[in-house]
Amino acid sequence: MTDKIVAENLSKVFGDDPREALELIRQGKTKDEVLAQTGQTIGVHSVDFSVAEGEVFVVMGLSGSGKSTLVRMLNRLVEASDGAIYLDGEDVCTANPSALRRLRLEKITMVFQHFALFPHKTVLENVEYGLKIAGVPASDRHERARDALDKVGLSAWGDRRPAALSGGMQQRVGLARGLAVDPEILLMDEPFSALDPLIRRDMQNELLVLQRELKKTIVFITHDLDEALTLGDRIAIMKEGRFVQVGTAEEIVGNPADDYVAAFTQDIDRARVFDAGRVMDVPEALDLDADDPSTARQRLDDLGRDSVHVLAKGALAGIITRRSLSQVEGRRNASLDDALQSEAPTARPETRLSSLYGACRSGLPVAIVDDSGDFVGVVTPEAVFDLLAQDNTNPGESGEPADAAPAFSA
Image (tube, rainbow, N blue to C red; front, side, top):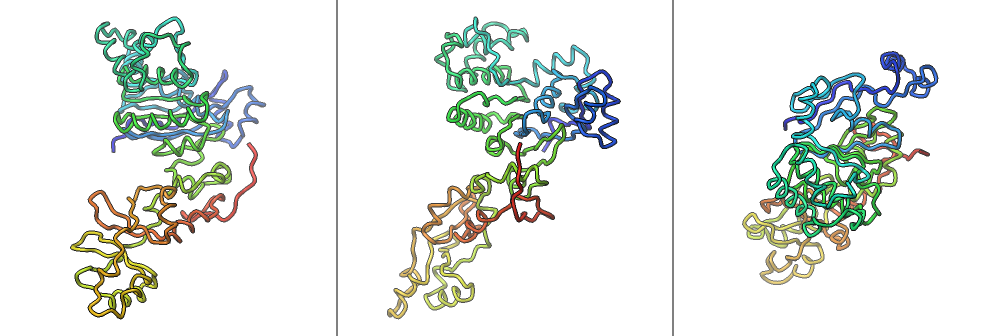
């Protein structure tokens, strides 16, 4: 997959002599020590990362961690003190004013936390504003703005003023304005944090739906780990201007890098993070045409299981259990089909464990099937509950979960 954004050794110092402050940081001084000694503030220090084309890369951290400074450096709303930023190989930090303007108009756009709508303009005029600045003819920009409003479900509101809209609707206008210019990269700086929780969840879901269609490269800033886990293909945890850990939701929650990350993850619902593929076992199955109750009983004994799935001509036909076998054993000419339970739970490898609770209550293992319907694994209720019961709130070693949760106060 092609890297759309690459940042190398990226640093930002707010002060008169950034080199002095950066040298002190390299010597092991803390941000507070640098501030006390020089009067300068370290916003971001020596951050390296890349974002693949079409990826949602979430940067998460507490207030003052440097995340908003970082995202503003990507389009040079904040100038970097050191390091390099490449968009499709083009160095943003050395771009001249003309090249920077082109990047901002054609390649990269930003959605802000507080909407930043013009109150005296209509919704449609707000959405087409970036196109107007870019010199797009009126008829074309009207059409593109209406199309963007339709994407966010506000096609009927184009003639209204922003004041007539709710907070969630205003944020959708801000998103539509960003989409109207058809950018390759979307920078989103805590765009949903000012919204009520239910509206915020709706906006997260809408963004995911849009992303499946548009496949933009997105850098999303948040202080909410639940939001990061919901949206991010990968997540970077930021502290005091640096990345503490970068990884998928499963990597962050399953193997936190240190106590700081562990503290963030200790209250996370693990069932919303891990999927069936994480806990599935190798598929074991009987053949409906070749096996009979006696061979089925022997197979259950050999596997040490109370149930096993059954295939018919290679396709999943159902499941047999020790109980269903006992009901037909001893009958004359009994077949495996007589003991078959055709209503057996199934799921995909990417199914979240939270969606398997109902199936697990039956006590039967869940058959995992791929997009072609092939039987690729088994998830037992015990495997699900064992994973959810693990306490991984301490940093693990060599990829293994940790043992206990740390105390933490932000």
